Length: 347
Image 1 (cartoon, rainbow, N blue to C red):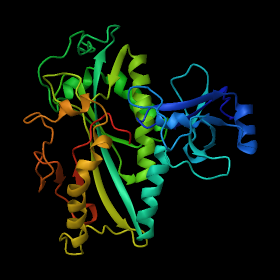
Image 2 (cartoon, rainbow, N blue to C red; image 1 turned 90 degrees about the vertical axis):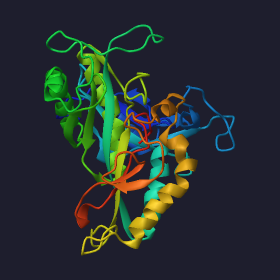
Image 3 (cartoon, rainbow, N blue to C red; image 1 turned 45 degrees about the vertical axis):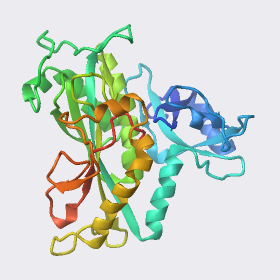
Image 4 (tube, rainbow, N blue to C red; image 1 turned 60 degrees about the vertical axis):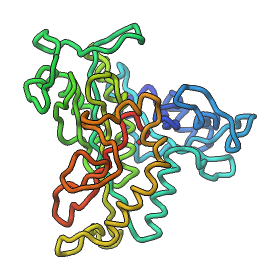
């Protein structure tokens, strides 16, 4: 912090919808909180609904007690869009007795990863993230429209996979990659998707917690970069009624924790029994998990035939009409692409 002359620290924690909640503080106060556990936040932070209401239930007391926020220092990074040098860090929540608060989304994921660890496995995830660039607006009732590009023209029609359409926003994407590098977000490819100013980026596959953190930070970063260029970015699942929706396709595989080998394929490259059971498990439990994959009313508008969105839980190889696609790959990269989740999910 001294070296970078940090003047402010943002302590972030994802709420149930995936939005960043937390506190800003001085570096001195932040450092002292690491020792005396004085960084606290009300437990209701983790029961804020997608409508912004704080919900009280059997998991959260009516008194709304404080929780201790514990910064995960492995996640500390710069927030490069701020005028003054600002650090940011993702925090976990604990009770005063030191027990993890199991409603916190990061703890939910940690508990799932622990179940894999007990089996000797490590889940690997690679997300493809779609979003729309939209022109600035001050009336939320009106339908969004595409922003003007570098040429001064507004995009219309379909420019799927067009490099020229990407070049229209070259300065924005250049800064997006630069800021992702600063925040340790391992961004890979960028393509133009079906809709006007709809784009997709890939975050490099990795262990579930690391990738989820990067995706959480990416959404916040992308909004800030768009504002710096006079635009907005939306991860809404279906911002345009007559255009393709936005998803986060989740490529999933599982590796043996000791050997690092993919348990979905054998040495000959054939599918294993575990691979087929994994698909069967997804098919069996996806209906119950839909509130996670489609958290908003708008989310369900995306599931429309002939709009590049899945409308079933079938699986197939190299088939984009099914909910669970198996991309062509060697045995090391054997994986399932879950195409059901919208861009509006909490990673």
